[in-house]
Amino acid sequence: MSYPGYPGAPAGYGGGYGGAPGAPGYAGFAGQAQDPLYPYFSAVAGQDGQIDADELQRCLTQSNISGSYKPFNIETCRLMISMLDRDCSCKMGFNEFKELWAVLSAWKQHFMTMDKDRSGTVDPEEMRQSIASMGYNINPSALVVILKRFSTHGMIAFDDYVACCIKLRTLTDAFRRRDQSQRGVASFAYDDFIQCIMSI
Image 1 (cartoon, rainbow, N blue to C red):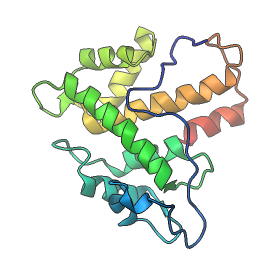
Image 2 (image 1 turned 120 degrees about the vertical axis):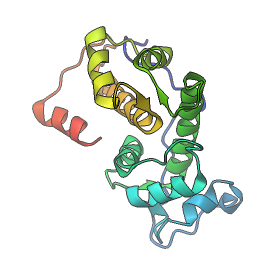
Image 3 (image 1 turned 45 degrees about the vertical axis):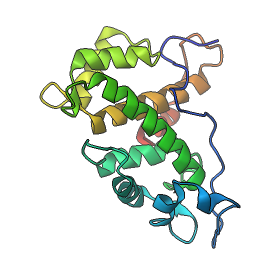
Image 4 (image 1 turned 30 degrees about the vertical axis):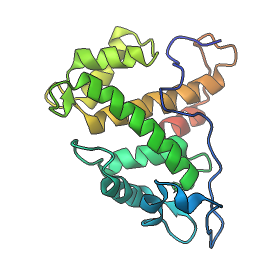
């Protein structure tokens, strides 16, 4: 049973967190080198088969996943890492990178449908519609806060749109895990609350 504020997975998101190859001297799994995403990842990954936020930023810039939009800034890349960082290593393995790629591709497609003039930005009303279409049921006062936080001169750029999507997804996932009755109500100890907020 779902509750207000928690959508289903966006299109293109396969769900589940794949295991990260993390052993020293990691050489990849069979068929990995044939994966079309692997060259982008391996070009920046270290010996442990993992990448940090700086390497992820270089990887995404080289792959041109943002297309005609501006490359992702380092803070957004840190958010991307934290979204899939279950072991708190502040790094990402190839499986997580593939999951991230699927999510980013879906978000980019969604953004492009709103950015009809290809200005690289969307207005607050389009952002409201986007959040609602992803299944989030957020009250107007919370939406105002979100729009102020992620807009510049009243417009939301692709980079900020992705950052907003990551925070909505990550915080909603954290909330859902604590909402055992799935009624839209959860209890947080102070330290737990701080850890949830500060980890993204």
